[in-house]
Image (tube, rainbow, N blue to C red; front, side):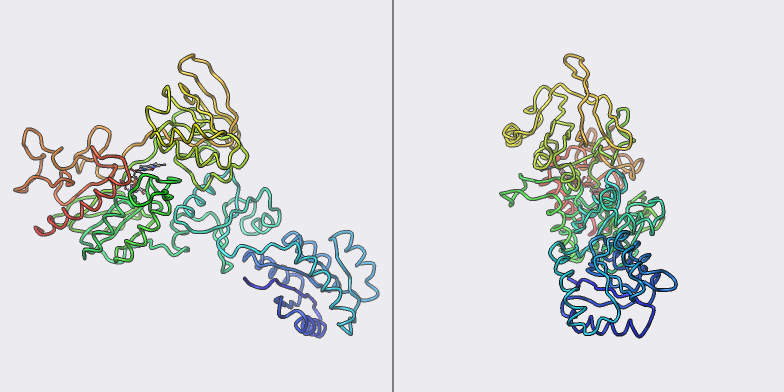
Length: 553
Ligand SMILES: Cc1cc2nc3c(=O)[nH]c(=O)nc-3n(C[C@H](O)[C@H](O)[C@H](O)COP(=O)(O)OP(=O)(O)OC[C@H]3O[C@@H](n4cnc5c(N)ncnc54)[C@H](O)[C@@H]3O)c2cc1C
């Protein structure tokens, strides 16, 4: 960790040189000494230090400076560093100013010039002040910091993206940190563009897109070549498995993911039924390991980028990305999975990201410590989320449409929920609406068995009400069922006949779609088992079929 700073400010070069020399001699081993020759310059330096989250222990400032007096500087500096000790350097005639300083900026000491010998007049005073400061000092966090409002949807998205890419960050709520708020005001006046992201090198981004953020944290956001043997669309368990097997077997492989890798599984607090992890594994952890593994074998993992359309120009499959650029390949795997369905009730859209969350929102769980929250849904994913939230929230209410959890949830989760004192399960219960001005405050409930209506106060509601496949980018190109699931292999055969437009002298492979060379695996595929293990199995099996297909191109 960088040493805390002692900053001295004086417009007289001779005095500044002398104080700098004396400070260095005594404090150099524990503190970084900064000498600045004007108030405005010192304020700029102080802002930069705050931007880097550097610690400032003490300001030693001359009162009589032409552009800005010492007291004026300290008035501003203490907004950024309220705990730093403040010492004013005064001539005898400035005693009045020093007394004003004590009253207006909470001056800790005023020091008469000259301070010789420093062993007698300077060091004992500063040692004392610095010991006080150090006793209360907490070392700053050395990584990315995000400053914003807890109830802002964009702040939530950025936090979620970072936590899903397992990028460590510290969250700063501007409502409870006036010093950082002061700094953020200088970056985005009126706090118009939040959040502000502070990087350890002192640079900042205001309201960045996920792509800008990804570039800054070192993720690959662009393909390195125009052509690949295989393009995998979607970075959930199925796509990641395909990338690992494809690249490890020597295919030029690229995976394109629109958000963070991990897919639905990446949002799971704890996956307990995946082979080889007897005490479970956090979804984000599984995603990180698989992503590292795919890269280690040479697969390119490009994120966050959206595949907006796919077309065929034989023998190539052409993928259009969100910025209009295109990539080509011989074989393409659709592993685009599913997305949690949106709740269609009054108020829900306006409060999404401000108390209404879709999926597990692992990044939000700790923010609801000692609050009352709700989980909507009765399947395994809702059960996992309820158990995670119960570690923080004072009360978790599960709102379940059916008559019990047993019908829709694995027994091991039902047992744990029953054994958790602060989880209440309300059955026959649906959400009729949500309320709150700029954040969720209450949920309107409807008991479907009695038609009774009631209001449940809650700071957050996590929604798990089923999912829909993500396959619009191949609408009209490959065969899908009425819900949008992509049909493959034997399911394409009708009365022993191959699908319409199929020209090859063979049947579609097991995971091949109605267009040769375009494969589908995992949750997006019609008839798939919606589980991590089966998505992984299909992703790896698809690579075997892609090999066979490539032999013919
Ligand atoms: C909260 C939760 C908990 C779960 N817990 C368990 C569990 O404990 N055990 C278990 O076996 N299963 C569990 N599941 C189910 C399991 O996670 C899924 O079956 C599995 O993730 C499916 O994998 P997939 O790769 O097919 O699809 P997904 O995981 O849905 O991944 C698809 C990916 O494709 C991306 N994508 C979509 N469209 C595009 C596009 N146009 N361009 C680029 N990328 C795109 C998406 O962003 C996504 O990352 C859980 C699911 C949820 C939601």
